[in-house]
Amino acid sequence: MPKINKILVANRGEIAIRVMRSARELGIKTVAVFSDADSTAQHVQFADEAIHIGPAPASQSYLLGNKIIEAAKTSGAEAIHPGYGFLSENAGFAEQVSEAGLIFIGPPPEAIRIMGDKLSAKAAVAAYNIPMVPGSDSGISDFEKALNEASAIGFPILIKAAAGGGGKGMRIVNSREEFKEQMDRAISEAISAFGDGSVFIEKFITKPRHIEIQVLGDQRGNIIHLFERECSVQRRHQKVIEEAPSAVVSSEMRNKMGQCAIDVAKACGYFGAGTVEFIVDEKLDFYFLEMNTRLQVEHPVTELISGVDLVKEQIYIAEGKELKIKQKDLVILGHSIESRIYAEDPYNNFLPDIGTLNTYRRPQGAGVRVDDGYEEGMEIPIYYDPMISKLVTYGKDRTEAIQRMVRAISEYHISGVETTLPFCKFVMEHPSFISGEFNTRFVEDHFDGKPPEGEEDEELVAIALAAYHLKLSKSQNNNSLNHKSKKWKKRLQN
Ligand code: ADP
Image (spheres, helix red, strand yellow):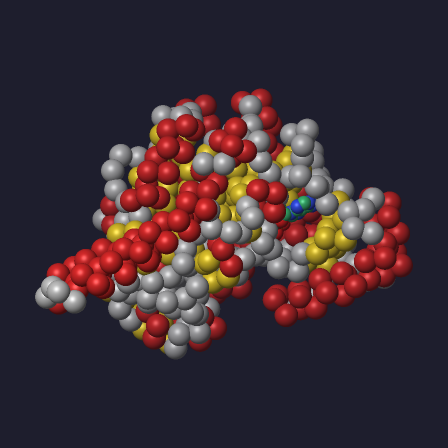
């Protein structure tokens, strides 16, 4: 069995650090790679060594498989961990890594290839008894045929890109009349995002919940599941808040979904850590959506309720070790919630807000985990995903996890950019979230995109305070003004 002594992490930001932490605990040396934009980044400082791989745009650095493999060889690393995003679901890269005599810490390339295309994924699992959303099993080529198929399924329907990801290339069609226009749009979006215009039809589930199952499989055919994560609070079809366990999944439903997820993994000869996503309708019937063949952003909530370090398991599996964890030994302990803190303005349609973190103070205390890659004074580069951190809380039950999230948000001080912090607070305090009665329409149904009244009042108070201190300053020295103005500035910014 190959023993891994050094890992190159082909990623940046919080996930690179997260992977390196587990490696370090196992006594494994770490190698970071970085672009021009990241020469002083946290992941570079954290690693035992770091190798520059190119200019800031990801296409000239973090997506250059050859350069990354070369860096691994130069540094003497035996294995490459891809994190999520970038090259993590690139079957060609996984293959190249093996061909170079290195270990890819992830699933076999064939599994990535099958699951990377939503249509081939559906075809692969067809032999198993897995519930699927009604829809086409091949790409749309003939418009008339597709329209007939859509009518037979019944509107509204969803047009999806087979190569889809990140919610791109997805269009809802409410009636026959809209079909042609939306199909053309979906195809052109899919071509520009994925270079592949293949699209297909799925029934649009009107008030769905997004619930996914974490799986782990070794190279000897053992596969287990580590329960579910609910990721229904989304904007632009993308997750913002995740939790484990789900507020609505019974142990019977969990067992069924877990078994389906294991079957999906079996269907593609999976090993490593992976996630099988399901969409759940109002009757709590679930349907297979897709499989993500990598570590998910939201994996910490599973780690906190199961006590399993998923990255360590990925490393053991890559070394060829047998899974030590048995399904029957796994239990859910407590509840965990993750808030994704993006540099985005929730009061301006969640548009990215790039800038410098003038203030950056993390929350601390019991039941709080912050996975991030930033320090005060750092700039958020425009080249990459605008996620600043993942704020994760853990409690003995859902109520305590929510209370801790509200408390942690109040302790988290960020200024210089707008963030999703106030939105996450809004969700935690919303009766629908608290009661567990919510779905992927949470933002449309409940969030009006305006700052709460209270906050506006506070701003007025801050402005009044500012005026007062300005007046005061005329009769005082500058130091005192600086001190006081900082205080009200902070009030304005928070
Ligand atoms: P992507 O790979 O682009 O992330 P997914 O298939 O994982 O696409 O779907 C992303 C999100 O889009 C889901 O979490 C859900 O909110 C919504 N969605 C996907 N399929 C459907 C469907 N058939 N009906 C309703 N909503 C859907």
